[in-house]
Image (tube, rainbow, N blue to C red; front, side, top):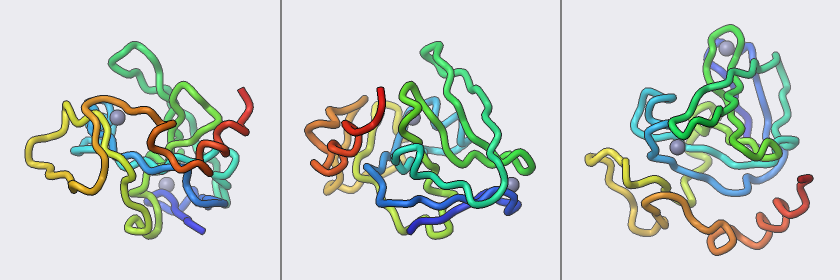
Length: 151
Ligand SMILES: [Zn+2]
Ligand SMILES: [Zn+2]
């Protein structure tokens, strides 16, 4: 069971199952939002992110394509814990907030067209200039889980 939380300890969460898939995203939105080179997102059904302490606060963050991304932050220290894109039934949990970030590793690297040139990717992990076909890459069990989600 993966657990994590913010920097001040006011918000804690637990993931109640294995992730669906793990993204390492090198897009410019993720670089700007994190102030870093990329983000590592653990994809999991939103109802499998169990908040065990505190209450994350929703912040609407503009993206370059004109859409808004909902980022859930600790109301006190404002560390970003997870986010929702267009499909709110899936949460993107920021792997750096896990108590043991090394317990997950990327299943795919995406938006490598804006990857910083000094980041070297492992050859064994699939990578894509932009996005990819989840049906071709995700394990059957994860695809079944997503099909079971509402709307
Ligand atoms: Zn906090
Ligand atoms: Zn991104």
